[in-house]
Length: 346
Image 1 (cartoon, rainbow, N blue to C red):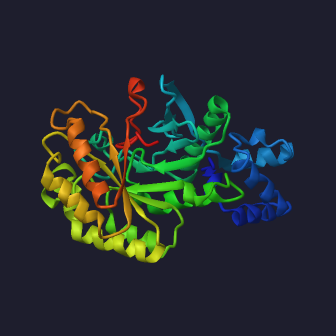
Image 2 (cartoon, rainbow, N blue to C red):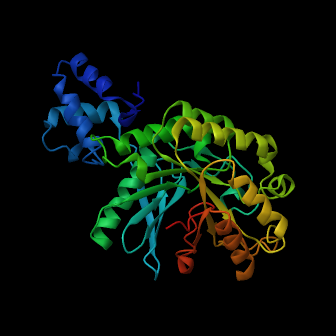
């Protein structure tokens, strides 16, 4: 009878230790293997050079390491690196390295496809096939960290969950991955350098606050007028603006952490005074900052980048009201490096 092999990285360190004890070995062997799997990034059991051949054979007989593979990598003239990542079941997700003079940011995916239906987003055109596992999310970060060291001679400094998928629709796996990314047994990154972006899943925003997570929160808002928001992001009918506002107030009350609003200005959609005034009003409820995002076109004539003047109208109104605002230019245009809807973070 064929043994169904388990993904070894689904086991905790304690479960690995128990496995070795149950198989007549010492518990510390589990610590060794755990270190190889996470902090040393072993792709196969043969990589575990301080583990005996007999032990490696036993591991091979019982487990698999479902490691990702960077299938194709593209480098933009502006330094952006886009990875097409092949998973163990041959599905593909994307991750992007975005460099600046002082830091490198990883934009990572959390789902294959997406659970939501934002009309302006390329990923939304793909049905959600499955959630990514914690190790698959972790592996994306490890791959970009290696590329950052190779091409920029410095480690990865920041992570944004703005790739394929809605992170809060894969909450347990996303935060298990973050736990390992921030653990000393993993990459040891500060949670303050990690931003989780949501399109506004209110129940899970409150759960983040209750769980006392230390990451930063970003919200893809794009309109503070209910009718416009529902038109461009139909799923938001289930998460109306008053409910979102209440969830964000709850987040700030619990965490005292400012929120970032991600906001694209489109021609003939939200490039008017009513939309500007609505955003200013919405921003006054909770301490926040606004990132105005240059749009990555998905060849849909309904969504076109607004004029420079329209963007300036937003900037002037926000600044007059004491709200911090930055303009984020699109990166990697020559390689179509749109990681999900908002890959152009820097």
